[in-house]
Amino acid sequence: MLALDALGNPVRRDILQLLQAQPMAVGSIAEHFPISRPAVSRHLRVLREAGLITVTAQGRENLYALQIDGFAQAQGWLEGFWDEALMRYVLVTENTAQSAVQASVETP
Image 1 (tube, helix red, strand yellow):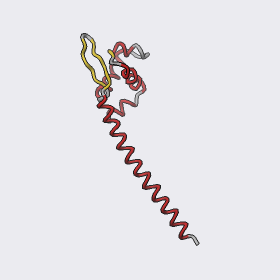
Image 2 (cartoon, rainbow, N blue to C red; image 1 turned 180 degrees about the vertical axis):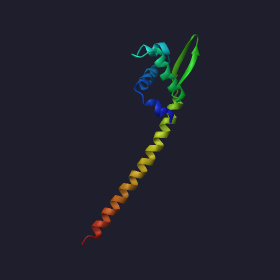
Image 3 (cartoon, rainbow, N blue to C red; image 1 turned 30 degrees about the horizontal axis):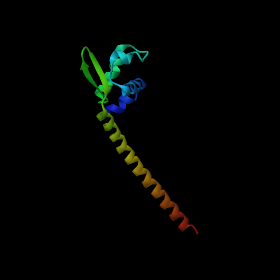
């Protein structure tokens, strides 16, 4: 899942936090980081390709904003993963509990 790969980078997570407040142009975003504007643009491209942000032309600038649908898809994937893990955990604990009860009954 591209969204999870994109979220693996701390700079990209920080960019997303900035965009929570409002849409921003690349220059405004770059002012918050000790990296070059082209590097920020590359991070924005990764976030856009992952479906986590959108870009809209406004005059001579491109404004970047959060794309909620991308986060919802990532959340859905994580919830499905969590549901599967939880189900396996329940099965293990039930089987362990049953084995313990059997062992105590069989012990003279």
